[in-house]
Image 1 (tube, rainbow, N blue to C red):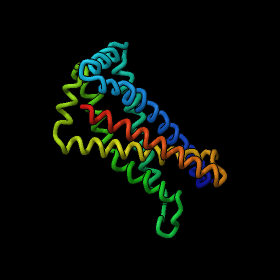
Image 2: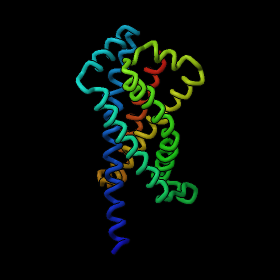
Image 3: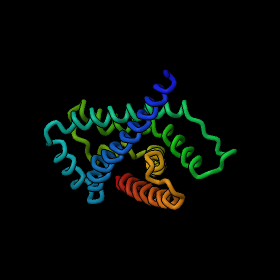
Image 4: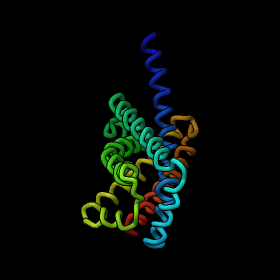
Length: 206
């Protein structure tokens, strides 16, 4: 009975992990990609966008707490799933295992990257009361090694989102047939390329 209860709880824990991933992907688009795209218009456009966002009531507090809680939950459950799961890409060279490997490898690499970015872009500015500016980000990304890490982190994030979407659709029974799985892999790859290219272009604008 306990084993059944544990498996039932684990089943729903994985579903909550999927949901938190979808919410984080949405937050990534709404709170990063869309507003930070104003950097393409130069420093003045970016600073105006940031000022407008920070003038919204409780914007800093709500977004920092909500995103922070989602990230910590997603990381904690992801580490638990990684510990409990098994994948043998050598013995079972199927696309599912390859996507699993990509998801877990990029997920581990993303932990320090995402936590640092959360601190710099959300916690740091919220604690100091200062609005994030174009010049501040230019100074952060000025060292070549920092820009390389940021671009690498963005690519990992895009790969993680793509592989996670493909896995979630399979887990939730949306891709039962072989053709639907192939279509899901193509759609996930396109989304990953778009998110990665978009994010990298933003970073290179600073």
